Amino acid sequence: MDINHYKAIIEGLLFVSGSDGLTIKQIANILETDKDTVDHLINELKYDYESVYRGIQILESESHYFLSSKSEHAEYFKKLMTDSHTSKLSQASLETLAIIAYNQPITRTEVEDIRGVKSDRPIQTLLSRGFIEEMGRRDTVGRPMMFGTTLEFLTYFGLKSIEELPPLTEQSIDDEITEEADLFFNQLKNKEQEE
Image 1 (cartoon, rainbow, N blue to C red):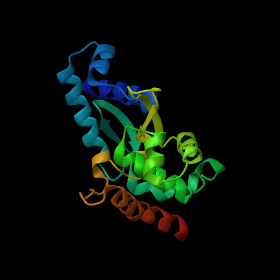
Image 2 (cartoon, rainbow, N blue to C red):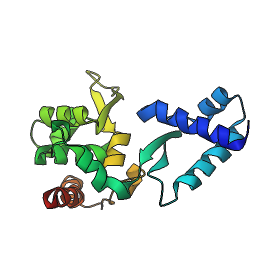
Image 3 (cartoon, rainbow, N blue to C red):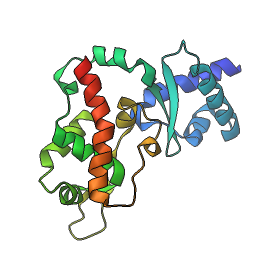
């Protein structure tokens, strides 16, 4: 098989894997080749997708590779999404999302301690929108569920990784989380109001 054939197979595998993504080892096992070859092929695909004429890119998170749309085309994707599932997030949901993004993995009780109010509904909204997911259970009394952000969150907000969130300072971490989150998510609300 030639290199373009392998690249096409990898592209298809990443597409089919969806938000689960694939590791280099998984792809190497499927292609029955070595990890260095797969790494080289993925880098070539990344280069191919960097063209302004391509609408997708390859993202890496926790050693898993995913296909994702490019953030510079977001305005067109928003036009496509017109059902109620993509309605605007409430202030409570935005606050909850910011707290989870900056403190993940975090339990519902910890979110409520920071917000000062119940957060069941915002967490359910964020789960249904695919912005957060369950990340296992905390090893404490009651074994509460922990939550973290998803690839959908990164894609929607045009981030390559969670490290691209605005940095927090040391002073008054609870107030700072809300303040930084408001700055970050106000940009989103302003874009939605312009439309």
